[in-house]
Image (cartoon, rainbow, N blue to C red; front, top):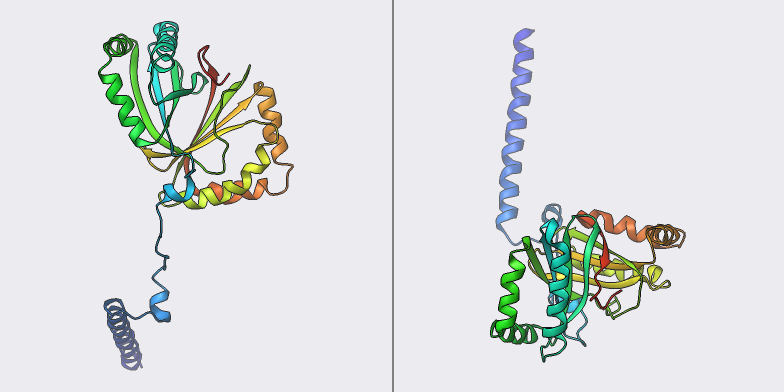
Length: 279
């Protein structure tokens, strides 16, 4: 009886071994061929070929605006002097003279990373305008002296080049007083189009109180990054406005579908400087 039982187990083992070998061979033949049948479709996710770049599908083609955002971490004891110097340069170099750029807004971070200055610039004309501006500034002795003086006040700095989403309003000067929130989303690579599709519908729920200032996505610097800029009268009005959005049908669905696209998110509450066009 024992011998018969061992023989039965050995036979079943041989059958399983042959089955696995045959399955491996079949799988290999399918993977090496161009077969488009049902078996291959179990393992291959078909993606339609892109016919245009993400930037062309999401940005405002009619404006050709390019944006630069700067994050300057300032020595705590130098923040007031930094703000004065920056305001002077913005007035003298970027308003009085012919530079193809304009400051959209300047802020100090209130809640978030401390002793931080944030500047948003617009280049009307895209990359050629940016190149022209840099050439002019590099030949301006007054500007070069400003950079040397500013460098003494900084701990670190970084920037990004951005495009604006086609479904957001262009940020324009506004009176205050307001506080600003910049919500920064680091998305999973390859999800920018899906993000844009959802927010093109969702933005309608957040525009009626005029709090939606601008929406941007990165082109150079940290990639797959989105910045949404909002204006509120106070922290209390921010809370009330955000809570009211949840009462509108469709807002919850947008949050539900966009959350899986996000790797991380950061919120900055910012106070405009005296020289900022966005007050």
